Length: 128
Length: 180
Image 1 (tube, rainbow over the protein chains, first blue to last red):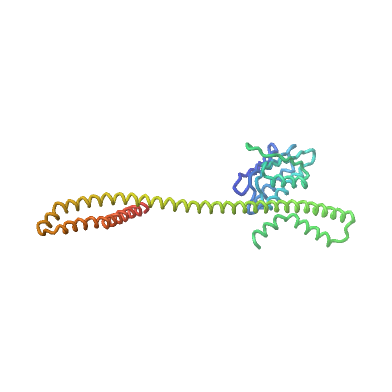
Image 2 (cartoon, chains in turn red, yellow):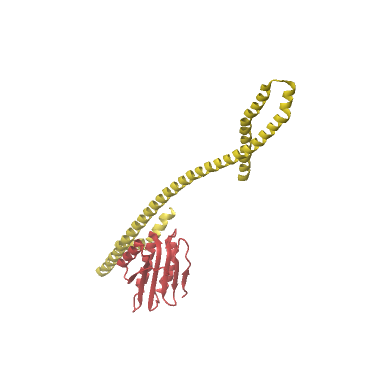
């Protein structure tokens, strides 16, 4: 299974999903015209990944802004990863937010309430 | 159907598919109670998830709206500041233009003064060397000499005005050419 990688654009985030080490990253802005169309290839890739996940999977989220439909797609991504939490496979999410961006922090807290994966809230440092 | 509506329907495609499934199940008969219970549990779970997601979408949407309002207010404030800066720039520009005009006028005035002085010297020499001997030769009335000198003196001011206007026109023409 190949890695999934998409470079960021002003409207879409960088998607780096490494199947070799199980480290995934979503970073940047997510305000595509059609979020479903944008995230569909990634969701299909995740369908394959969750069939044979790594022992430890880490999803790093460093979003600075996302629209409402992107948030639904994020839920879908998290839900797919929830399915991978079986047979002692560990999944973790690190949700990074800017210290001054309360909205992004609160969004992370919201996801934490409904997703059954441990979400660690972390303040984004400048060099990150 | 508009693209936006199509996209929003796609966002909830899974939920719509499950609803369709639940409706189909409802029309079927002769199922065991255990199957019904399983379907009902599944429906409750999906509904529970949907409530959770609806809460998230609502709060994220509210926050986005709040952010947009903030950005809008910021834009409005910045627009007002730009408007004020623009007005100040216009005022300062006018002050600068007035100062430049005054400086040009003063420079032209000085140049015109020099030219008029040269004309006055020329006229004085003409009066002393040519006009005065000619008058003295033809008439004994000294008032004619005095009158001619007074006429030259009186003419100096209109000459100054004409020279100044001419120089000013020249300067403005040069400025227009430079701007083009």
